[in-house]
Image (tube, rainbow, N blue to C red; front, side):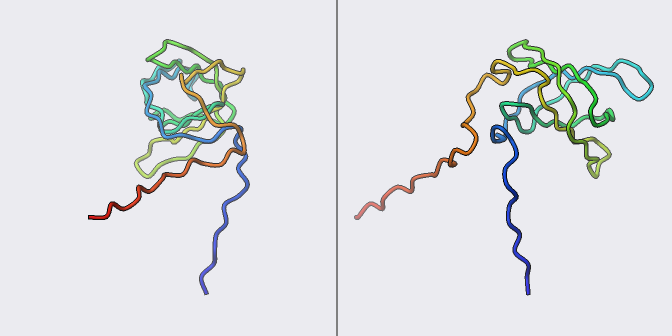
Length: 125
């Protein structure tokens, strides 16, 4: 008998949205050498985002993230790191300080129901 999987309770303050923003990520690697990488966000929320990096980072590490389109900079904390099959690192980060619209967009409030697409009525011919 197949097992049904139920989604866990959403823990995020704001939902994630698939947005591809150009970023500059700065920090220190394992050898304490400073790095500066151009990357793209893969998903964002009002409290952080997710990107893919070539350079390994560790959980809890502080990064300086710059949104290239707005020039806005903010310090972030690495909250999740997974290694992809190609050897790159999927990194989720959260803003350390509350940030005034870092992504230049508005997010739904926590607990809001997702928008539903309206199906157009069929036209009788």
